[in-house]
Length: 223
Image 1: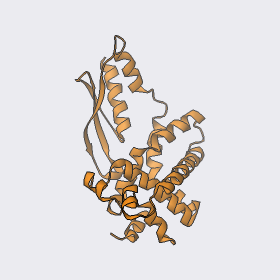
Image 2: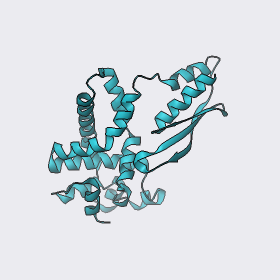
Image 3: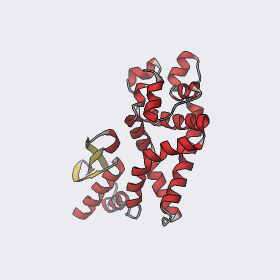
Image 4: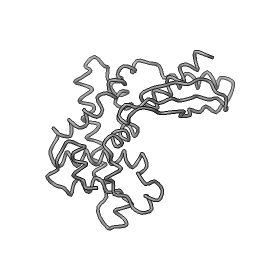
């Protein structure tokens, strides 16, 4: 498909089309076709993403303490969130993958799609400056940030559960994804926590991390 369709998805038109083309070029394709990959753009995009999200959290939630802002950013600026953005905007339809990578996963692995979002963010910044890229990042992360802010004061139930279960020695604790439902931009995940193969509890959340926390919380209550 033409990248112009992705520009519609992004609500941004590139003046320099080579930037968006490079941003969508995985190293596997670059190696096979002797072209530039998106690795350098990914590097830049990571820093831009951190800056924009930090600025938004700082201005939108002035009552948060420094440590709380750090936790919110870490929760939101992660592979899982970026993968959701890639799925929402159909990045897999436009990504240039090498034959070897396509044979492994036709649509691209979550990590590759997440990296491509960072590369596209850098491409948008280099092409149009901070304003359009800020708009894109905020529009795609503001809901995730709001959820993270609402949960920022909660205990790390996974750590508490681990401490309780390992009081008499080492045990194997697993978090199993049971189900995910809803559209790509608003999914609900259901996770089960097990100890040495024994089912303890289940939990639901807007992200896998939050579903795991809910499952751990319920397991603690049962214990």
